[in-house]
Length: 417
Image 1 (spheres, rainbow, N blue to C red):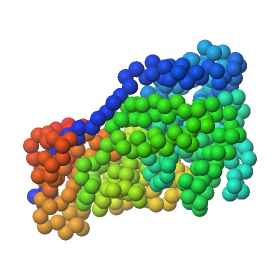
Image 2 (cartoon, rainbow, N blue to C red; image 1 turned 30 degrees about the vertical axis):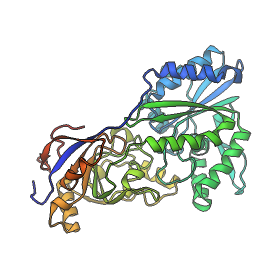
Image 3 (cartoon, rainbow, N blue to C red; image 1 turned 45 degrees about the vertical axis):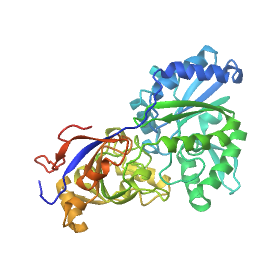
Image 4 (spheres, helix red, strand yellow; image 1 turned 60 degrees about the vertical axis):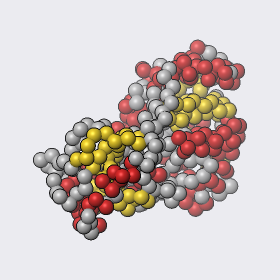
């Protein structure tokens, strides 16, 4: 342990985290109140989207909807709606769904996966509007997604039902085209224009919108009719942003993040937390990312938004998936490899050297597990006196030194997370 590193303490942040405990019962209540049965007919082929965005209990949600529709003698099927995720191929997208427990056998209906698209018309930008081939053949369509902020897009809607209509249903071909349009014309203009045509042309009967709590568990389920999506989704995004957990101090010299991945955020880490989004109120000088999540399967999209990492992480990167995802999103900044060194200790030494730290007690550092789980974090001694000024914070344990294993990697010695 270098004497040049500050001491750290673990703090716990009290975050209100309402959770729906019985997902199946809540889904069925919403469906009955919505009167979904009046919108379908016997024999209808009904496409239901499955997301790669880490919807909690997505397998239970899908099975509940599928069983309900089968009881009405319709023919539901699942479509992977995830743009270029999974390497932009059928096998990769099916593999993502399987990791979420979504298979034909478990859900009880076919999964129709393809990267083929058809055009359902032209946009005002004189470009085709692409839709998944199987979705375009369905009699009815149900869209599902969680409501969230986006890593880059800023608007009344960001990640959610509207984005699923464009990027999800558009598959790889549509996602590439739409991101290019967004770069040229802005996200609000493109989403408003294309969503209008998609909702008019496709038999979308409803959208399931999920709000998730600080533990990434479903806290609210909203069922929107297709004509309600433009009006109601922006209100859900505002609600989501209001309850979203935050780091309690917004000016940092260094943010250490244990893991990043597509299951956590589109760019691996929430850019609102890392301060890498233009409307974020976080001011973070440097971000050090330590590892990839297991669920991301080597997709390190967003690694370029960090400043430091280790050779261990770089060796885990699936460059093919990462680059395909980044290029589809029309981003060349996000897959770039930051400065990487042999281990955590070397990274921290280099950061403190570059920062010219003479008094470690003045260095503003916070260490988190990932940008989703912010109930516990380690803070440097600069913040010790400031903790008592924040009502929802309490200290867990005593001040301690950074600890490293024999290979020079940080140890979360008290297993705070």
